[in-house]
Amino acid sequence: MPFLSFFHHFSIGYYLNIIFYLIVFAITLRILLDNRNPTWSLAMLLVIYFLPVIGIPIYLLGGVNWKKRKIVKHIPERIFKSNLSDLIEKQQKFLSAIPSEYENDAVKNVRMLLNSSGAIMTMNNHLSVYDSGEHLFNDLLADLESARKSIHMEYFIWKSDSLGERIFEILKQKVGQGVEVRILFDGVGCFRMMSRDYKRRLRSAGIQMRYFLDPLNPLSGWLLNYCNHRKIAVIDGIKAYTGGMNIGSEYIDGGARFESWRDTHLKLTGDTVSLLQAVFLADWENSGGKVKSERDYISLPTETHGELAIQIVTSGPDSDWHSLKDLYFNMISNANEEILIASPYFIIDESLEEAMITAALSGVRVKVIMAGTPPDKWVPFWVAQTYYERLIESGVEFYQYQNGFYHSKYLIADGKTATAGTCNMDMRSLHLHYEINAVVYDAEKARILKNIFEEDLNCCRKVTMEECENLSFIKKLRNSIFRIIAPLL
Image (cartoon, rainbow, N blue to C red; front, top):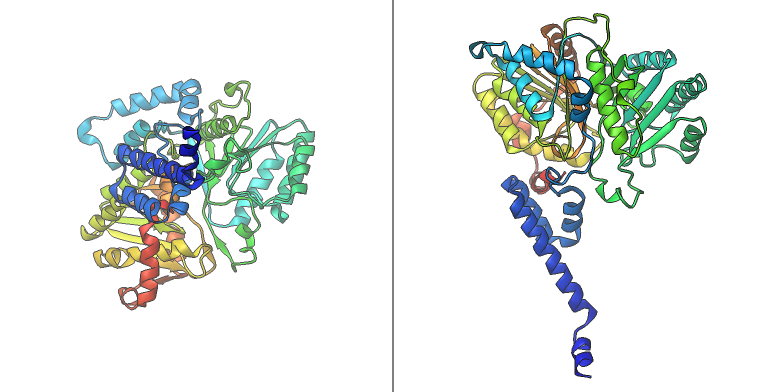
């Protein structure tokens, strides 16, 4: 038959080629219509055209613009509005009562974060800062043991090592006492970190556990590039922890790879705890968990905890705005005296790079501490080196930590405002990960972090312009090649 002979004239490969070119064409249109950063768009298109086997999966896993197509349904802002209307009303009255001529940089931050991420500013708070895993986990374990009503824990990494076993025994005991225990893991961060036996014992003990975007789930596994990088623990709705430390013994002793581990974590009590609780509940529901009544977990304390102004800021790939990146940009751009940045990784976009250069050229002291050698990941370490020359030339100072691994994440502006939490100074944290930071408007607390920063400087090696210029051609080429795909890292 003529029709069949026509059909057999073409091979299967021909039709596969047609499908392939249609996919490339559709992705190209999608990238162009998204109107994102030209550098990112060009890098993505180059990878798709010249390395399609790699580029197409990279786009599908981490390049889709989720601001219009949401990954998750439940957002913390919705819980804020539903359950914390009194706090929102107080904040609105506070902000509306400030004459415009008296607005300062801190008030600009408050307004920006309120408008971009619904970040409520609370005043009745107390905060403790930890720069040691041993001290942090001593207090956290004690608070877990004292729980009477609920324990909610959410971590990017949770290991079934000696620390994980200690926490398991406490959680098992608390379930036996009638305490509700819910733990949420990131599917990628915890991949191969917990033994099957450990997970089985968690379930057998009556501990409720869920994965955020489980990579082994066919419905969510393809979203594995969008990690939940948050670290949250809320006990009885009255005490909360957040910061850079996951659940793992290396945060105490450095583990097998490092002689020590430097990190920063926070403990909060007061009104802010309700916000951290709301973030956990939203993430729990987004992971398929059920909550009968959010109001059972969210209530403002009746006692006074202090006069400390704090905002809790969340950010993710499907947030309306890049709130944490905008926060960093605002703090750097508005600084008049000094900017101190702590981050294990340093891969930023042009806007943050120009903000740092402009600040340094204006006479603002800008210092950055990041991980030294050996790092936990070599590629981000190499890419960071491509930023050194131009930033150092403008006056920015880079320091590499030498006394073990450096994992702290905070930024201090003019010794008055500080933000600390889970967000690194890199593209993944600023664009692809679900993150959470506390912003503290208090000179005393900023001074505590500054003192820690200055102590860490004693364990650092300053990066010089001479060593940047003397870097071998091969290493410069290697770093620059990875820099091309920096927006995708």
